[in-house]
Image (cartoon, rainbow, N blue to C red; front, top):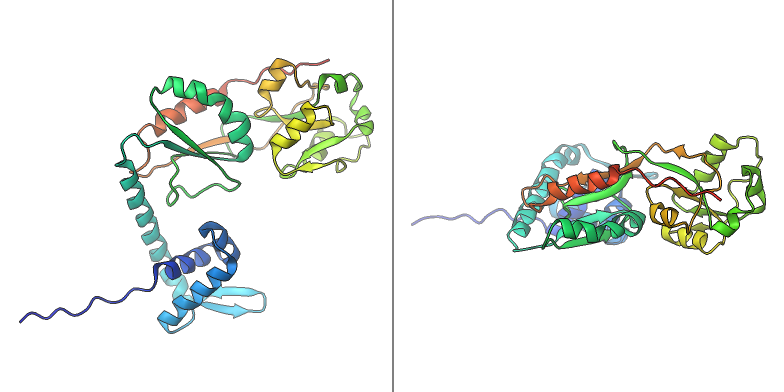
Length: 297
């Protein structure tokens, strides 16, 4: 008579995921963002995991939590395990016939850089379906179901910033000192770009670079500039079409190079879309095309 001992019982998967994310990111709040739940839910799941183990995995301190030595030693194996699960799921995704190529992009890149190029992309790749997800943080391609990512970061490309505005407003701007009388428009993420550009192009102008409204989306700040509501610190990679058509102009010729540029990354998962490398090459070629020279009044 054969004897089959029961398999060892595993903890609840959600509890294990919450612990792994909180330990890897060293933050319950960051783990909650990654998992799409509240910090309280992560705390509850970690406590459930600790109850299953019978001992704590975090030391609670007045300033926060710190991993125990045992948890720190186990973490790399748990992380590799979840990475392998993610790769297995992505491999299953590849089995879906004609699935869309999934792109994750910063919202301003998705709206202002990628969207205008999608018709040409789909013409170059007949029958290819593309899905685009706009998000603020770069996803982990080892775990999340995206084939390509488009974000700003270290890149072989180049980018630059300079003030841009509607043509009627530009007639009032002879020198950077004239900006003192105008509304400065800001993107909330790149709030310090005005100060950087003024230090670069007009260090003696004495202009308060912090004044003026800030917009949570770059496209909203761009719409305000197109409507004549003020002068926007424009990023050349995002404002090419309105510059080319003359809806926006650059009243000053001083373009300041930026330390970052649009960077395109590709999933290396075995389950990633088979056209991902070809699409990356196509987008990279589009990225390297120099922007149209800014119009000036």
